[in-house]
Image 1 (cartoon, rainbow, N blue to C red):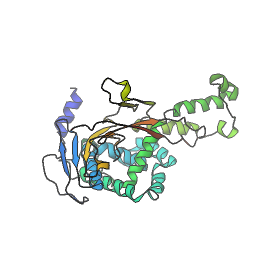
Image 2: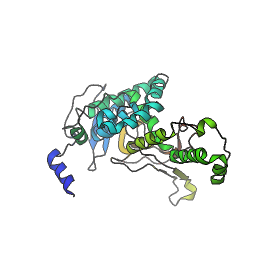
Image 3: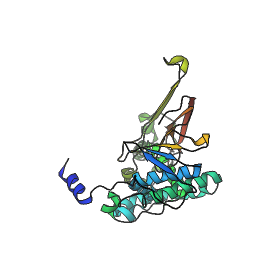
Image 4: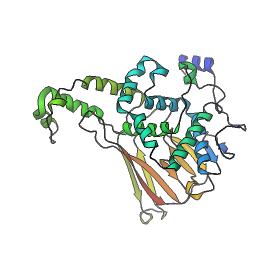
Length: 328
């Protein structure tokens, strides 16, 4: 252990989440039971879907308070309020793209069930990172400030930000535009023989350098992913006679990790997920294993738009096969 880490530990101490206690928190309709195994993975039992989302949000808030704060602030374009002037280019890029604006419009037209689930998850996040912690997280102790009030729109905002991270060829697109500006379409065709349409507006765009700088700043806090794959084998091709489903979403390594593992159970069979892996802060199990089913998520990364408006939307391709439920 290096000296700086040792000093931080001595000064700040451990700031663990509350686990062995009964908490009375606002926002749930019925009691929620959360048990953790020796690795800290939560098993959440609730009476209904909304309370399950609340319990999952509570655990996210306990374990990933600073990660959630960073995503929420980046999505809203308010990172500089927390980290200082170094966050201004990121805020400028976020507001220019409009992650939060798009999420606000989407939230108004999604189904009432999605609105209720995301709102319940957000209430759980707010309770988990306040009432569910023994002390302020290290990041807040160092940077100061108070957590923003996380809401259902922030959930959709984060999903849009994460989709933007999956379009991993921004640097290539900007490099191609620089070649087009400097040497013309013929040079670009020689470099990459695809159809190139010359545009005087694009070739003299004054915002290119500023766009590249702001994008680089954004990627410091929300690094790009890149590629993905998934595959499935039918039971006729396996020794056990059971199908095999696997996926490998290629997300950039971060601290904390981009994934969060949890077990969620409700009386309703459709939501009795035994094992789930989410992208915090989100209540959806991108990779999940409900009873009798295995589900894997694999991000699709389309190429960015040639225009300066940004990349095309990313999507998730899912494959589902029958399998035996896992035991907790």
